[in-house]
Image (cartoon, rainbow, N blue to C red; front, side):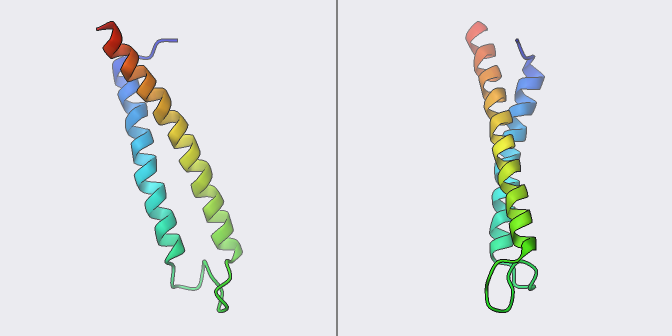
Length: 80
């Protein structure tokens, strides 16, 4: 399968975006002081685990999509 140049760059940008957004989200989740992520004893709540799972899955999918985009960009540069 051959990806076009715009699609390859979009996928690569999406992968980079995922790294920035989800790493920032996890940092903010970890530092949450509102009581949603951690209870009074400092133990993680259900909110924390659900959102951490969401972040990890999204981070992995973004990484895979970005890798596909990177391969597409590299293939375009090899044939040019």
